[in-house]
Image (cartoon, rainbow, N blue to C red; front, side):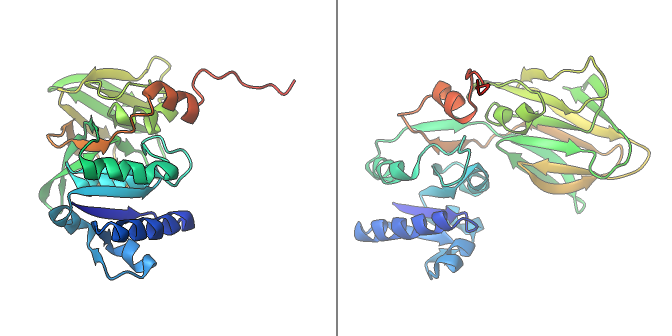
Length: 285
């Protein structure tokens, strides 16, 4: 088995952990390849562009926070991903640094379990070509620098859902329900739920609320505005500036993400420890 290793090179503790990991794998004669930027930081010649790692490797190791895991997952495609938290929140990353080696041992022994996560697929024209963009967390259209409040028109399976005057629209998976969508007032949805949530950002109407829909729906979104350009984000990365009336289509992707599961954690524990779910605030009295 050969591992692809992606490191958040902006964190010194992630770089230090990557060196320990390389030594550990070398001692056991286990193959691995760093993505190019990680290899440069670690001064290693054992490198390949991240776009090619899926061809050579059987599993991926992400050393960083949730952002690093999201980045890794796009290139892992369906290969197993071991997420090691070297960040702050660590909501998606299943393993602590202390648990990393045991997790890799289970993958080597074939005794690991997988959490399968659905993705979104946004279809849009970029450079006069149809592009299919994937997102594990969310697809977001925002007003960006537009000085007024635009209207976002949403259709489900070709039928009008509503027109929202808002700062933006978030389409989130159950995985992404605890990310930007939750910050914008959306509900928490348990993983593996076969639903998406549509969450308006700062709607200019008191009656507007997030809506949960079946993940077999096809969502069409356009921005009704006389001018301007509007950022289209997939998992926090700007993919295109949309023009007024330009329509994108969002649906469930046929490609899933396979995260190596930490059997010592459950979802309730994650909510309690990472989001302080159900914890009463200490007034200091």
